[in-house]
Image 1: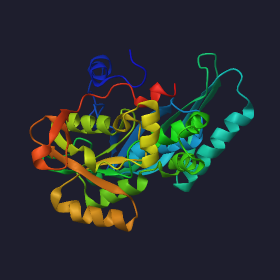
Image 2 (image 1 turned 135 degrees about the vertical axis):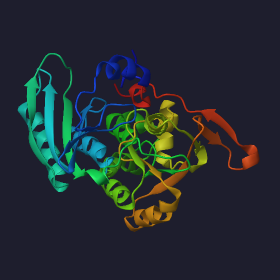
Image 3 (image 1 turned 45 degrees about the vertical axis):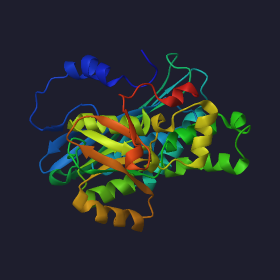
Length: 334
C-alpha cells in the first residue's frame, strides 16, 4: 500500500463497507470527501472529526490543532473543544511533550477552544512523536453545511493559495537543502505560511453567505480535494490551471523536488462550492475579511472531472483529474 491516506477505493472497500447504519440521530456518516461526522442532539448538530499529524516534526501542537479545527470549519460549525493524543518514542524528553501541549493550548485558546482531555504514552511502536486530535464543534441543525450539498453549475473557489501547508512543512524540514535555490527571505516566507493554516474565518463566511459545500484541502492537495468533493456529490467539474494561485516560493520548492503543487498537502485552503447567485456576496465578504481567493472553475452535471489548460477557448486542452494517491509531501518528508 502507498504511504499516506488510503485510496478512495480502499476506503470504500476496507472501511466504509464494514460500517452499518443503525441510528436515526446520525446526520453525516463516513464517505469520500466528508470531513466530519455529525450527531443530532435536539436542535443542535454536534460536529466531530479526528486527524493525526504524521508528515511533520516541527510545529506539531500548532499544526495538530488547526488541521482538526479546519475540518470543523468545513461544516460551518463553531469549534468548541479538542482531545489531544500524543504517542512518543522511548527517548522523548518531558520538555518536548510540554512544548507541544503548550503550543497546542495557546493556539486552541486563541480560537476560544479548550483542550478537555486526551492521552499521552511513551511507546516503542513509533520512532517520532505522533500527535492526533479529535475536535468537537456545534451549529444549529438548519445551518449545517454538508460536503454533499453542492449543485451543478456552482462556482468552485479556493481560498488563500495552493500547497500552503506542504510549502511550510518542507521549508521547516529541509531548510538546509533549500538554501541552494531559495534566498533567506524566501525560506522565511515559506516557513511563515504556518501562520495562515486556519480556515475558520472562511468557514464562518461560508456559513453566513450560505455556500452549498465546503471541503478542507489536506492530503492529496487541491486536485485531491476537488476529486473528493465531486465524488461526494456525484458531479463533475471544469477547473482551470491558470486560475490557481501558486506562490512563487511554492513553485520553486516544487520545481526543486519535482513535485506537483496541485497534489501537495494544503491545509489552510478551503475548497468552496458557491451558488452563482451568492458569488458576489461571497467575494465581497472575502475581500472585506482580507482573505485571498481564486474562482477556479465550476461543477457540472456530467461527471467528468477536468483540469483545463489554455486561457483561450480555442486553445483549451483538458486532462482528467484522477483519484488522489500518496501526497507529494512523502516524496520529500517521510
